[in-house]
Image 1: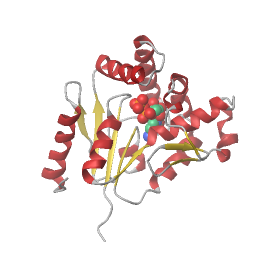
Image 2 (image 1 turned 180 degrees about the vertical axis):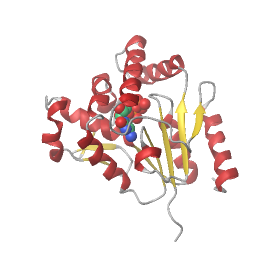
Image 3 (image 1 turned 135 degrees about the horizontal axis):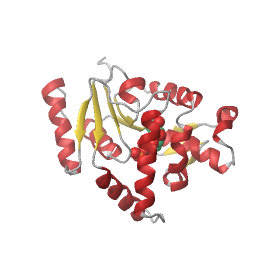
Length: 219
Ligand code: CDP
């Protein structure tokens, strides 16, 4: 049997990691896993139960996060793919993602995916799959990122201002890069992709070219 292929996509907030990861998984017939959704689901649990981040370790055993057959994130069996995108969750998630016990639980779960997978997050190429076949590190200008996320949230009828989105992205990037455990950083062997002026199709093509030329993997 051929061994499974892992593609790790890390990078700053709202750089289009999930758009690229989904398209890539579809083109290659791989599983797509949104690791950020898992951190968001744990955060949603705390908000719903009025539990402070300091107490998250005490309740970790009560929190079960997984994906349904349609790849939608579930919290204790309930599909929460809409609720985890609320600003309230975005405001707290990087605090929750700093907690070592939370990371341990979710990283272990992420490492249990044994099939070929495209996974996006902050520590996939550095911690979750350090031997991934392909690692990408995504960035884009802060203005482009804020506008893209704002448009996305408005489309989902969320009530939010561009300023709120801009400051949330800045705050999360800072927290993610400066935390003690598994901080956001580019793996030495990751390809850097700045997609400020690339369309979704162009960035997909850029990655498919690398896969074909360097790894002889064709979609
Ligand atoms: O907003 P965006 O889609 O860029 O973020 P996300 O992928 O939904 O991740 C939300 C937050 O979860 C990040 O800002 C990190 O604080 C945390 N996270 C993490 O620490 N490690 C991961 N592998 C994925 C997300």
